[in-house]
Length: 383
Image (cartoon, rainbow, N blue to C red; front, top):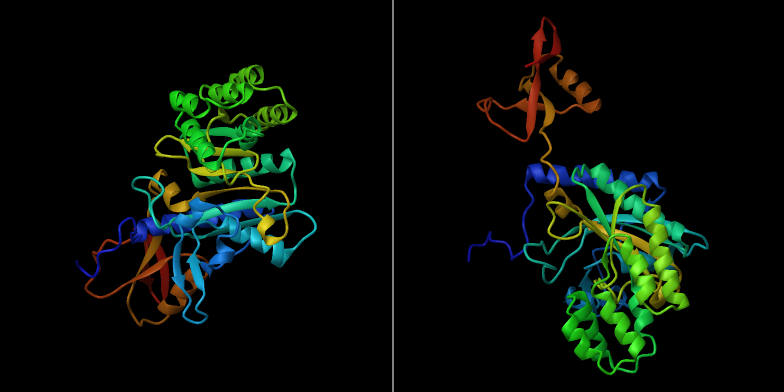
């Protein structure tokens, strides 16, 4: 095998795409800052017991593991940044009130999470710690939508809402082992009604009928009314459905759908969860929700809600950006040229000095102007 061949699902990023990714990263962080979110930069690798504390088997399987040559301890390359941010909130900031935190950096996966996906996403995320109300849920959803708008997503987006409390309420008190529960989760996610009937044959009638009803409870806002009619009328169920209805009403005209059987990340979320979809993307561009238990393993179990997205994936559904405008300049020691170029660059202009013999080469910049000598001065002139 050639030495320059990269591992599967790992790729170099070339100039046009790299520029787009970097510009998009800045736009996303600026959008989050506009909401009052503070930037944090967790390390790419940590001791394994800290990195995987409380995250569940799925993240464990996605994490590359290695041995620290200094200490001999096991370490891991992060596969998700949220556990690290929860650790920062719990042990480094330790604020009494609300903490709004954002981040953008690479994560590494042992396997792609879907066909054709990269194993090295550039993960951007924003999270609120310390507030358990719908106000924080609403803010996170609005910020996620604003991030997509700022990124230039032109196609209509759909916000798909669900709530982990619905399935938890239906399974509460059901006397079965974890393996059966896992099969039920799998059947719900696949909307496999026949399998669900088989796995829930010994469940209490109310739980069994409620779980079977979830398979068909997806669509527009009418789903919530149907859910209120067919699901058990408990306080927890009423609250979950009421919260979903209120969140949908607060999203300022965004298209909203519901899928009450969607259990992706069910071990992670404790309440509302969402995905944001758009045409041209094979999966959700954004995923997030409420995960109030995420800080418990760090000794600070307080409310948390947030979202994340892969900047590299987001670039893939956006229009190609035009080349950056630039000024072409000759390579010369002529008097005044260096000072003129330095002054232009200090104002934010890109000035490309053309090396001798390379006047006709095409590159990443669009030179729509050039520096020409006019007497003893250098002037910018349109090409």
